Length: 59
Length: 453
Image 1 (cartoon, each protein chain N blue to C red):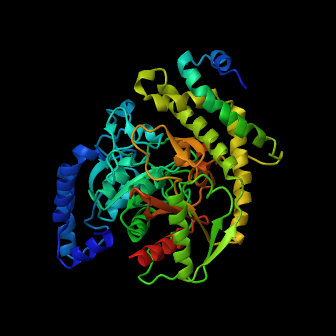
Image 2: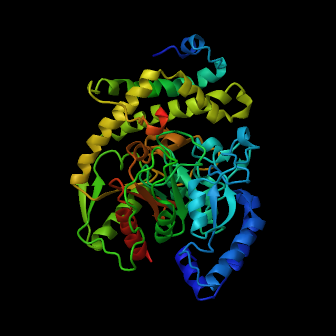
Image 3: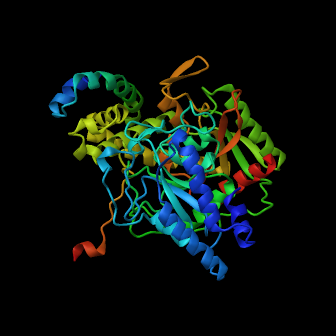
């Protein structure tokens, strides 16, 4: 599993140790569920977020 | 009394909007000390709106079935000149200078806004146990949660304080309180109802919709608030349909899918029985009940959680330096989101697109799906876990398990009451439809509601 304490320290997130301890099991569970899914993604799939350039943005 | 019945009574002059509004304010005054469903009432402006509605109706200026009807909106909808807190002390003094698009739409339809409904802090949770504004209680059993995050809206409608209360739904926040409180809750298709002027929890998962006493009341409300809004980048220009089901709506030959995987696993047996009973009623009305396999919803939920954690934390990043402003459950979720790598967020949005394509195949087999809304009835206030057969599950994860994925897919869904468990607590049926096919799920829900009468 990831070392959440070190990640928080590296990002300078200033999360108290007791709070980190409390959320670590949830993050570990999500990591277990999510990480294998990323291997299913084919290269041509784009994210489902949108950016639309508007004509007025050039004015 | 429903909106439809009240609208008929208003036009017969059997009652006035002023009387309906006084009755709503009186009921709030009587019940709110116990239930805490409403954060604020707008007595003076409500009375003014009601008087105007009566005058307009008398002059024949009829704006439709919501005209003169007392309603509330969750305190996530901005209201010009009226404090809008999003259930958080961060916004304790936030007085918007604009109305949300939904508030505009309801005002244009002549509805009378009597108050702002309470909610889970920042719309980020399902208990509505708000550390800043107090615990909201379930009118069916005040020792139990109303669900959330639109818990005040659910409690206000179930206790008949108002005819309709607007909610918002990022991972089930309309449908969960509808299920726990025994009301109707409609989450429209993504882009169908404008998010303009709604304080966001999440950029890509938030949806706006009504909680009501009847299916037709939900349809009437959707009719007033649906449509393209250029002020919301995600707003859709799909034409708005006619949502109100007729008095004799038929569901003959409709293909209703009953999932064979995921949705009927780890349920309270009473929920399983109640939902299957509704499928049997639909079959007796001429619908075809078809077994169907749905794509991996467990994976869909994981994708939804990554997106929500990342987007909500990004939104709240500028406030998190002052940790005392947040309740412990919110802080835990915000910290989780800050620890996720950006690559996970991007990949979650890529998986979302893949899963959307996978799920589209379901619609070649069926016209809508029947699932339970929640795996259990309302838990007790303070309960952290629920026992479902041999499983012990976190209350939040259990409550969102059957609804969260539908937000990721952006599909329309409605929760309607479908019976009670052994303790007499309401159980919800979720009906999920094709994108922008709100008319169909409303028709199916209305047919079931009519059959149950």
